[in-house]
Structures are given as C-alpha cells and as structure tokens.
Image 1 (cartoon, helix red, strand yellow):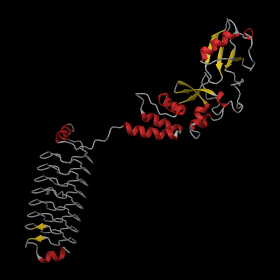
Image 2 (tube, helix red, strand yellow; image 1 turned 120 degrees about the vertical axis):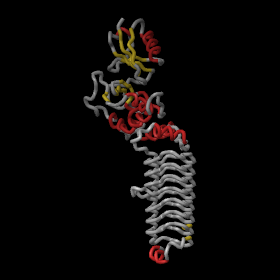
Image 3 (cartoon, helix red, strand yellow; image 1 turned 135 degrees about the horizontal axis):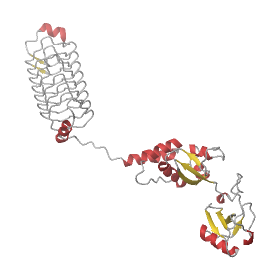
Image 4 (cartoon, one colour; image 1 turned 90 degrees about the vertical axis):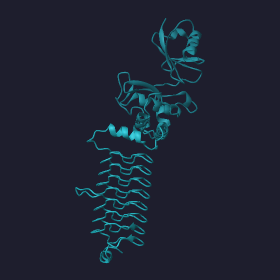
Length: 388
C-alpha cells in the first residue's frame, strides 16, 4: 500500500497513513485520525482526488470538511469569509526546545510586541532557522512557554517550579505589556507578608553570639519595640533609624553605638554607658536616662545634636562636653547633671530643671531658657552672654 501524509486545512494537524481500499475508506481513516468529518481530499496543487488510484506513494494530501482548497504555501490571503480556515503555522526553536504555533498567535494579541514585529511579515528572519526550518530564538524555553500560552488564550498559567521573576524578565524582553502587569501582581501576591513583629531579646542575643566580634553589626531600621535589651554589650552597633521605643536598655553598654534618627521614645536607659554615642535627630521623648555616662575619658564626645528629648529624665548623668546643639529638652529633668563644657547653643531648655548642674564653660548661646530652673552657681554674667 502507498504511504501518504494527510494535512487538515482548518487546523493543520499532520498524520502519515497507509492507503488501502476505496476513497471512502481513506476519508474514514482521515476523519478518525484528524478528528473531523472529512468529505474532500486534494493533492498538493489543489486538485480534487476522486479516485484512490490517483494517489501515489509519499503523496502529500490535504483533507477538508467541504471548504474550498487553500494552498498553505501561498502568501496570499484567503477570500473573505474563509479567514477562520487559514492559519499560518510555524515552528520556533527556543533554547533548543521546539514550539509549534501560528503567526496570528504571535501577532494578534500584542501587535506592538517584539514577537509581533518578528513574525508580522514572512521572511523577516531571513536565514535564522535551524536545519529543520524552525526559527531560532536564544531565550529560556521554560520561561517562554507561559508567554506563548498567554498569547494563545490570554490567561497566565505557570507550572510549579517556574520562577515568576524569570517569566517577567522574558515578558519584558519580548515586550508583552499586558502580561507584565499580570506577572507583577502575581509576584507581589506570591510573596509572604512582611514580618513587622518586634525582635525579642532571645532572638537578638542569638544574633549577637553568631556574629564575629570584629564584624560590624548593622541593625538599621529593625524593630526592637518593647524588647528587653538591658545589660547587653551593644558597643559600636549601628541602630540607625531602628525602632527602640519602650525598650529596656538599663545598664546596657552602648558605647559608640549609632542611634541616629532612632526611635527611643518611652525607653529606659538608666545607668547605660553612652560614651561617644551618636544620637543625632533621634527621638527619645519621655525616655528615662538617669545616671547615664556620656563622658568618654579619651575625649570622644557624645553627639545628641537635634535630638528630641522632651520630658526626658536625665538626672545625675555625666555629660561633660556633650553636644546638645539645637536639641529639644523642653520640660526635661537634668537635675545634678554634669554639663561642664557642653554645647547647648540653640537648645530649647524651656521649663527644664537644671538645678544642681555643673554648667561651667557650657555654651548656651541662643538657647531658650524660658521657665528653666538654674542653680546660683550659674552667674548672671554668664547667663547674659549665653542665653536669650
């Protein structure tokens, strides 16, 4: 029996079958193989086959359900009303994997995409085909498959194990704009919600123990709200912009720690070592800093410039040479503090209790001392030169 290839017009499926019996037998086999009700058979030139004797071995035949013959090799458009019966099939070799699709699939849904421009006109790729005639595309096949399926049916379907970020990168490469939006939403929804819960003492101690002594410990922006960090060695740690509100930092060693713009509101730092600490623009409103040591024998001065220290209790603290320039200490308690040589220029000391403080050589130029309580040791001459 001769063997021949059968093609279906309306959905170019391809089968190789043996020919035997009558033309009716051939139509029956074609119907079964192609899943249609075959009524007509044409040769490659459009000739209607009405006798099985006209068929030769290795013939390529085209089967249809009654529609007129359309040569799949021609570039011309089919007659109006027959557009649904003609599809320009092609094969893509994407990273070594073959995909069979239609030109309309690649062009119609995203007409401004790179794929649409690639295949809008025949011959645009010239000789960029492999030995099987498939168009070569040097991209990842596993990320290309969801894109091709999206162009087919408009739904984003990604198999398990496929990284959405990889598919997003391919969608951007090919310019599939509508798919990019779907992928960005899917990636956002697939990410676990951010954990904003505060870090506990146990977690932080484990973190400290796992960090080499000479390594810089960076805790910028972390949430320690309400944590008990009392009596811990926190020297040189970077807490910039961290949330330390309502923390217990009593007796902690914060020597040379960076607390710039950190939130220390309502925290307890009684008896803490704050030598050389950086607290620029930090918020310590309502905090307790009684009996703290800001004085570094080596001359390294603590810097609290611009800090919000409203209502803080710093009674009995050692603050020789401290920088409190333009800080806010309204209603603060600084009773019996050592502020010798401190910089208080432009500081708001309204209603501040400074009784018993050592303010020798302190710079209070431009500071607001309205309602502040001073001890007699601050001479009228010094006051007139330094405050407003």
